[in-house]
Length: 155
Image 1 (cartoon, rainbow, N blue to C red):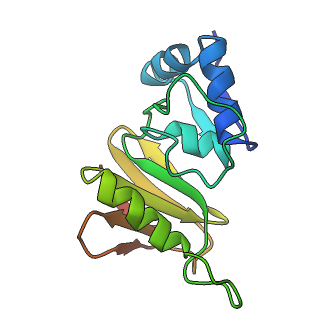
Image 2: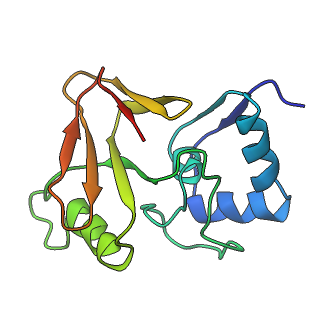
Image 3: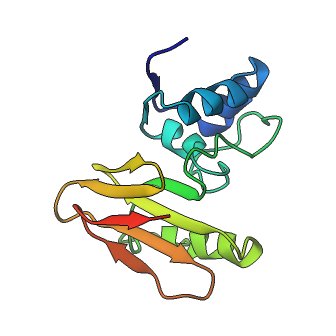
């Protein structure tokens, strides 16, 4: 009966585990499809997508499934940092997301830098946030696309 649904941050694995444990995945999806506003950040953004498989979190608990709310039918990667951090010898976030796309070739990833959000209405999304923080759209073996703040797109 909620008039709005808000899901914040935390560990995405734990969040999805409890959403399944308390039978909330389908209930939330149905409410959002009925027009109830859903707003979120961090882990809440991960679970708004098709799966939580592009989370940056540690797998502290195993959810029933990696399938998420699918309110936005693509992958979401919040906290996105482009490039390699000075002194870091590991993979960049782009490289990790590219590895995901090799195995999940039909997926699209929307990587959201800090302070950036997607406002979704129907099948349209608008990028919101700080002017110099575009969203990175990634697909398998396709050039990445930057979507600027204020731009809208159909998904």
